[in-house]
Image 1: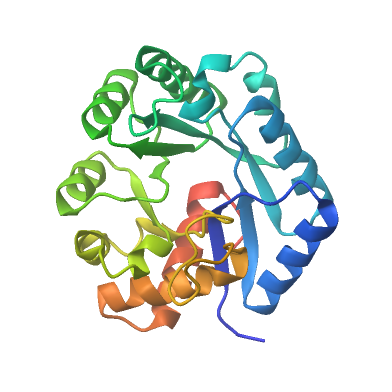
Image 2: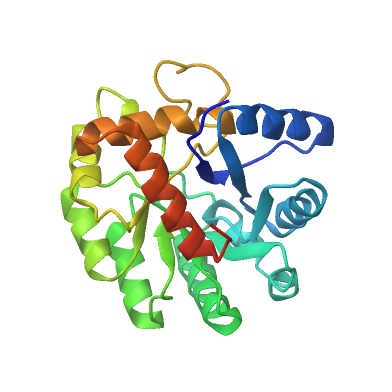
Length: 253
């Protein structure tokens, strides 16, 4: 068993508890000892909280993804009071798919920023093809002191804009894709205490597992990709991202 310790900062465990338990078990064998199971709707957030209460090493978030913004967030504040909820989100803007009207996306994103402030919880952001509006809403509402762009897909320009605002960046398996040089540039310039790693499982399996269903155990491969981009040893990325996740979510180190 590896001596490196990893946190999968963002994943989506399956509803089947037996399968979820097996994924967590194999993750721990790879050194992935903490998983953040991220909510994307009211119903899904409740399932994440239930799993977090049942599986050691798993924590939950409560949030409404921009795809589901049209359904509102009534009841989300109550879910966010659970002791195993460590953040609000994922929330934000997705102008690529536009599964909810953009005006509704902006309204629901703003409300979840407000909820993070009210509950004094970190904020997990999903943004796609919507950088300008994302930054505008954050600036207007006030950026929670612990805010992360999950599955960061920008380049150096977007990274600098976020870092200047005090946000954190979370890198996924995309860091290993051959067609992501600007993302690797962004990873290289991010301070050691401002980045985390994630799988976004079951999506975005990293090289060399592309085409397969992603799993939390493979956050180690993401870490290798970040290490290559930053020009450091993978052990350094494991230690730095573990420490950052500990601080960001208030978890024991």
